[in-house]
Amino acid sequence: MVSDIQRSPTARAQLISYLKHHRLWQVEDILRQWLAAHPMPSTETLQHIEQLKTWLDAFRPLPPAVVAELRQRYLVRFTYHSNAIEGNTLTQSETELVLTTGITIGGKTLREHLEVIGHQDAIAYIETLAQHTTAISDWEIRQIHNLILRKIAPEEAGKYRSLDVQAAGTGYIYPPHYLLAELMADFITWLNSDSAQILHPVLYAAEAHYRFVSIHPFGDGNVSTGRLLMNLLLLRAGYPVVIISNQNRQGYIEALVQGQQSNTWETFFDLIVEATETALVEILSVLATAANSQSKESPFYKDILDFLQTICR
Image (cartoon, rainbow, N blue to C red; front, side):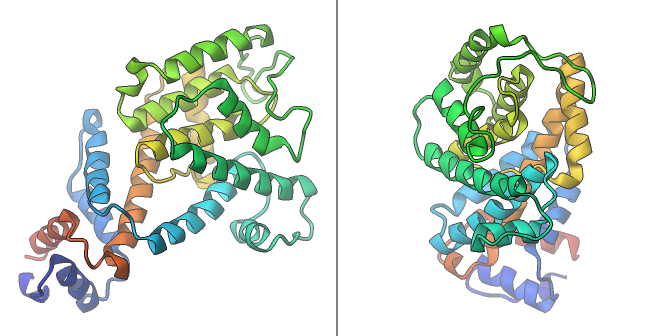
């Protein structure tokens, strides 16, 4: 009921009071309820993203303590899930140990440990690139790939493949190696074109991902590089890092395969939109109750309070 929300000087204080009274420890749960209560038709799936992003932008600049907490979360989880999708058997807790202490995990291969370090280096690189607005070139993409593979396969790192390849599971044939320079030049032109950059940022990043992996310019590490490129574009647009969960590995792979075989990418786009929504919900749930957010009278608080009042009548 409305009376459940204690009258306080600020909307933030009212929300904290409500959470305490109802013993709710996760703002994320409330945001999930809000999303469920505001269903969107399939043609308007980005409206949720827009609302969540508007709330997030009202909190900017983000408190340094929150930025540090979120970075530690995504550094471990992005690395774990990205590597797990590619077959790395380190668990998330083992990945964290490798990243934070440098210890080796018994029973795991050297390559698996080096994949963790390489992915961490690549994340740091895209974070640096995200702070600038200069056009992305072939060199930056090669460098992302180089950081992923340089400790594992230095002879391949940052170099285009010299053989023709096909997808092992489906038999899908990627473009021949002698066309890679031309195809990548076309891809870079599209990536920096006005027609691409006027797309919604999430759709732009998702399309860049699938265009890149469909060219498959490297012998190994293409999909990991594609996810990092996608997140570079999202970070530049003010979005949090978007993680494709290993639990959704099959759906992710099937969406890529469907797109490559039939040139229908709606399922892939939907998957990326859903993952972006999840990332925005998480960052908002941290910001909403962070002590450093006390001075932020974001419209988020009023909107969520209005929603709570509605559902508690």
